[in-house]
Structures are given as structure tokens and as C-alpha cells.
Image (cartoon, rainbow, N blue to C red; front, side):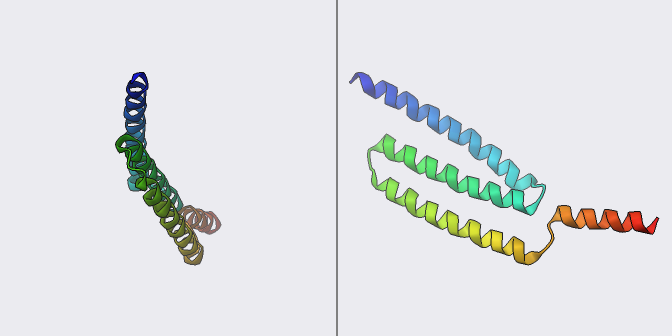
Length: 109
């Protein structure tokens, strides 16, 4: 009985930390500044979602949530690989394009 209060406290702290990280990561997805930054932030959102699922599994005692978290991790990994391939096939990032424009302006003057 003495351990349950400690577990409840740890679950609340974990949920608070995950909530803060969720909002910071959503901010990075929205603000950017580049597409690779947004892709990394989306991958981080998957990690935060896995954390939420794991904490809820501990809180409820229903450990099937761990299997759901593992499946979400696999899907998140595959989407990150797909986004990375998209960025590679797309060519230059926003920073590369800005650098190319800067070099053209320097050559013109």
C-alpha cells in the first residue's frame, strides 16, 4: 500500500513532462525553420505518443498498451524513413536554396 502513492506520483510527473515536451515539439513542427527540422519534430511526436501510451499502460495496469506502443514505434520509424527519402529526392533544402541565392547575388555584384 505504501508503494502506490509513489507510483501515482511518478505517473503524474511523467504525464506532466510528456505534456510539456508535446507542446514544445508541436511548436517546432509549426515554426520549422526547415523541412528536416519538422521531420525530426514529427518523429519526436511519435516518441512522445509512445511515452503517453506506456504511462497510461502503467497507470491502468492494462499492459496490452505496450504492444500498441511497439507498433506505433515501427510505424513512426517507417514514416521517418519515408520522409527522409522524400527530402533526399527533393534536392535542396531551404537553407541550400537561400545559400544558392546569396551566392548568385554576390556573383552579380
